[in-house]
Amino acid sequence: MNFSSSLELLAFHNVAYTIYAFMIISVIAWFAYNLTREEKAKSIVRIPFYTYIGFLVVMGVGHHIFTYNTIPWVSQDITRHDITPDASYKFEVGKHKWINMPKHVTVQCGQTIEFDVQSRDLVYGFGLFRQDGTLAMQMQVNPGTDVNGILDSNDILWTFNHNGLFDVVSTEYSGPDAYDRETGEDLMKVKKWLTVVGCKEDGGKK
Image (cartoon, rainbow, N blue to C red; front, top):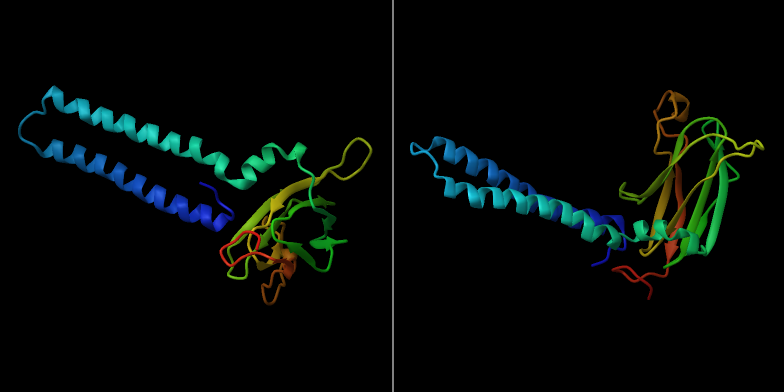
């Protein structure tokens, strides 16, 4: 089992948690049913009940234990010290404006890209959104400097496995100046900033 995008991951968890929720609801229904019974429940009835509760606990914990490493960006982040990115883009943000950001970035399918964003003043976010408005990735961009006065880095590695156009949006609220006071337009949004090419229709390299 492996997920090449956040959409695939969310679809899987949507099914898994829906099944899990119905299983938990069944426990409540079971308990309510026994409360309405005139006869007192015999002790032997408790054995399958608590076994079922234990099963739900094991299922809930096991779901995360056995799937965490199938999420590409999790294992990638853990072993990032051994990964050399195919390209790195470093820029800054300050006064609600992106500074020294490339005008446009094109990424080949399967490439691992490092984004390194430094904040000069406030807490911002760096997020890539698909054209349908769904979030592909994001990180928080915190301000600060080291002992030498150099801006602290906020970086993330990301591997792109699906073609598409991505907008850049600050995913953290940084005050009203990030928006047009008359129209409410997000002034920090950069439309179609990143393009991924060279993937098959269902993802992965051609």
